[in-house]
Every structure is written in C-alpha cells, then in structure tokens.
Amino acid sequence: MENSVYTAQVEKANEQNPFMKHNGIRAIWLDERQARVEAQIGPGSLNAMGTVHGGLMMAAAEIACGLLVRSDGRKYVTLDSSFRFLRSSTAERIEARAERVKGGRAVSFARAQVVEPDTGRLLAEGDFTFYCLE
Image 1 (tube, rainbow, N blue to C red):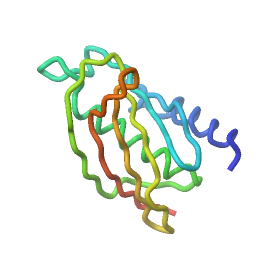
Image 2 (cartoon, rainbow, N blue to C red):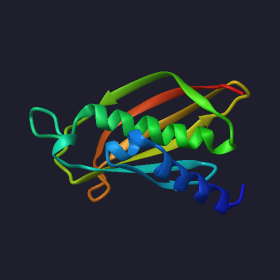
Image 3 (tube, rainbow, N blue to C red):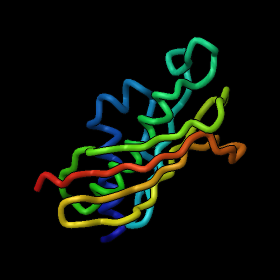
Image 4 (cartoon, one colour):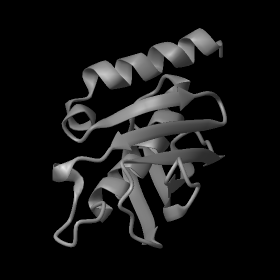
C-alpha cells in the first residue's frame, strides 16, 4: 500500500475517533509493519498516586494495534488481550508502538510496547487479538 493511504488512515483516526480525542491520544505513524500512537499526559490521565494511569497505557496500546491490523482496510474488533504493567511513569507523554505478529483471514494478532518516548523507558507491553468483521 502507498504511504498516502497510511497517512489518510492516520488522519481519519485522529479526526473521527472521539475516544482518542477525549483521552489525548493521537496516531503518529502507520505503515505495513508498525503503528505508533502517543498520549499527552494531563491531570485527567493520572491515577490516585499521581502517575500515568494504567488504563491509559492499555488503551494506547490497543489503539495502536487496532490501527495496525485495520491498515488492510477491513473492520476489526478486539477479541482478546494480555497486558503487563512494568513500571510507573510521570512523563508528559507516552507512546504505544505496535507490530504485527500475524495477519489472518478472520483473526489477526499484534503486539505493543508502551514507552516514554523521551527516555525510551519501557512501561508496559501487551498482546492483542482481533477478529475481522468482514
């Protein structure tokens, strides 16, 4: 697929996904092998301990993986996930980096890591399974 197709998919995700907007998550990269999203951390992104909420980390990872598997133009829903929280963060932004594990006719698999982009510190990681609706 052309890079312009991926650029259009990134723009569409950023413009048409109210959950992403509400949570300060933006798609920043997509190609046939990987996707990346970033989340700007604000007061509403923090847990009771003042660190980035784990739910935001998981949401960013799932969004990055979903963006990647949907890059084939089909519609998917998340079927299953396994997620590990490795360390807390007080960073001003986080980044979820997804890579395709296997794409199938009906089920696709992707893996994501959540990092502090400025330091490279790994915060969380997870595996996601998607079911194709088409």
